[in-house]
Length: 319
Image (cartoon, rainbow, N blue to C red):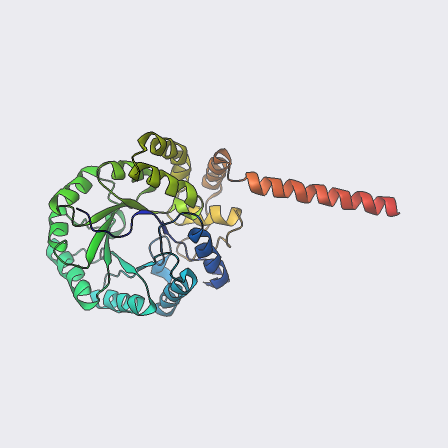
């Protein structure tokens, strides 16, 4: 049996910037929104949170702010991974001290460790910090895959409780569940594969799309876990074109662009990430329009236009 840890739709939270600084007010608003939208947990300082371009002080501050804004209303799983084991231990210790409920540890990138090196890396962190840990496997970004046999070894460590799988390989994910005898919960790390991952035994997703459609992603996962498979499939099919558009360019470029259009934050990125290309942005906007995400903003715009028209007419009559 999988451990009783987090399940459902967890959001890979973006880090809002304004004038190259953390936009603390926007971050708090985002967390408040997720509390009321069915999101099961917030995950700051992951890939979507541009952790690679945060200083240590900024990284610590984002986690502290997230815990403070969550106020115990929603679990916080802090991204604390690194390709330097001592650095990962330092970040994970801080997350625990700040009050995070768990930590997400990406596989060491660039170093390309062996499978034994991977095991020893995660083991060292788990032994140094007694906090529930989610191992994040994303070989497209790290250049190394964590094999099912390595997860089998890791599953014997009591505070390693789950895996976020972004390999895109459903067979591998099935092998992980089989090799770990259900000791590790399986979370999808790809929005487009959430339903298939649930179908093979997964219990949730750490979602990028949930930044803009949290209720819908939560509804899909909840429906499947409740046995309403047809309803879950309908959500999957509705979400899929939007999800595809959100990955037209490197994450989090499209999701921040979308959130900017929706007035949720300033769509500011840090180099080497840059603004979305015009052709890709046009395709993203079309996908969002087709999904219906601009209805509210369009109505607001129409109302403002009508108000301006009334004011103009009044000024003319006054003349």
